Image (cartoon, rainbow, N blue to C red; front, side, top):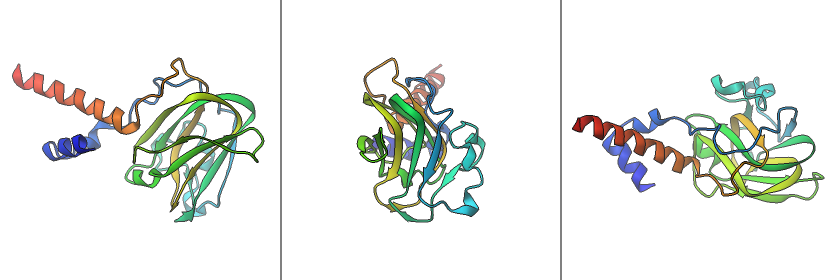
Length: 193
């Protein structure tokens, strides 16, 4: 966090230009193409794109899923139709409101009654999440929820099978920092040339 703040002070506005981390890298195959979902109550006037959440088509909209504003521990449960090996997820957050996922948790279940925590956001806000679980889990249901009273919204969500690497990928913040360091290295080299 201090390095990100230092870069932002040195290069105002640069963090906004870095963009979302590469969501296509280091996760397994997309296994939620045919999935459905249910959720805590949605804000009707802001949920016109809710059918696009799992399709990957909502990148140009502000969000595809929007809970009540605010809600107590809002949630969304994805039904994968059958038990599958789940390795992680990819999610695009709503721009400008990333801090609302500061307390996001992912739980999994085979029967929708017994839940097991698979991942918890311990890193803070991110424009996007590209997460591999430490170990793949067998699950039919994947629940994303906020462990606080807040508004929950996402632009896009993909549940993924196990990826080629067992180790978790860097957090969204770490990915943004690495991309920022690449940009700064390129600019320094250009200035010295």
